[in-house]
Image 1 (spheres, rainbow, N blue to C red):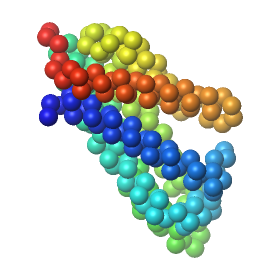
Image 2: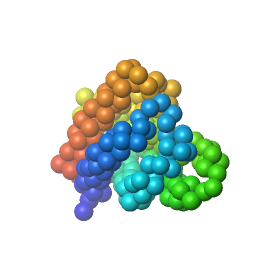
Image 3: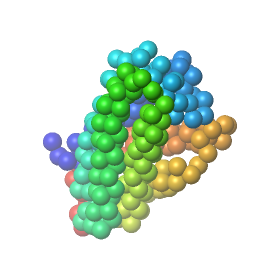
Length: 221
């Protein structure tokens, strides 16, 4: 299978994984009261959630490893499309995607061992730094992937090898992802931002997947 087609299908799989993750995590967090501000940094609540839904946690945590692999496949497909006309941008994009993949892997391995240890600990308060680190790794991975999306957008707009409107959508999505750590996460503003990001992400990724699958070979230079 051509690299670009493989990357397109990797995008579809990534969207499916994200959809499954949201479908499982949203009711889970609501059930255990983890949707309140900073609730995920409370060791007692997180231990209660892990103890009450151990199987769910054990299934979800390794997903980060698979997501990291998908990041790399997608990045390699995009690089193949645009490397002839934007080699430097594509090199930087591969670096950003690799960093995002490594952070996803680190977060998954950290979570797999950390939550299991926390569940049997005598003093769970010592696990607050672990929860803060897990949150930081996840945000850092999102930030790095945002740079990969932003560089993809710049490559698309500079080379014309992807639809221009798609490039503009990716540009907005990339900027919002890069500065996401500084945006409000609570209240109506935070909810609105999350909805906008989610809608843009789904639209852009489906569109990009279709472009890669339908036209696997790059345009002639």
